[in-house]
Length: 157
Image 1: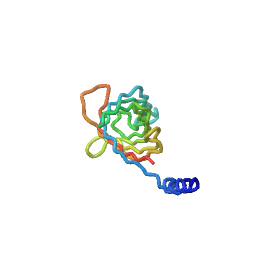
Image 2: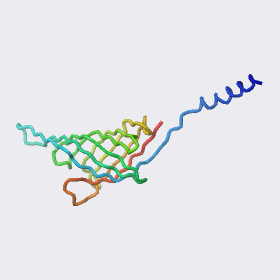
Image 3: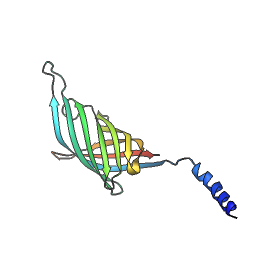
Image 4: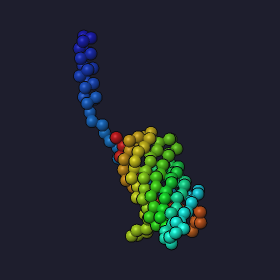
């Protein structure tokens, strides 16, 4: 009887262990308020051309489901006024410690200012994440902050 139980347990374990991993897909929709902590602007003194700006910025994203995420990012822009092409890296950290790391490019485009995301990695519930996303500028009268609406399509293994 004992060998029958062991054989049954082994037979049941094989299908469970051999099942392919199921990936999860999620679309994060949110509103994001950002503030630039510090921005350095440099110009080549021998040329009259665009400036190069580098900034360290922070923000808070309010997800459609009510979760909050702290965002910290760095970017480099070519032109100095923020309305020109730029590139950078962002980290979103949720209240439970889960996180997403993304690379972005941004600039003026048809329909207004845009930010395109590529998910590079994640941690916690987003470990191994990949995906893409976009932010769109929302006009406000704020002097020291910027508002965006965004979404990120995330796939986790």
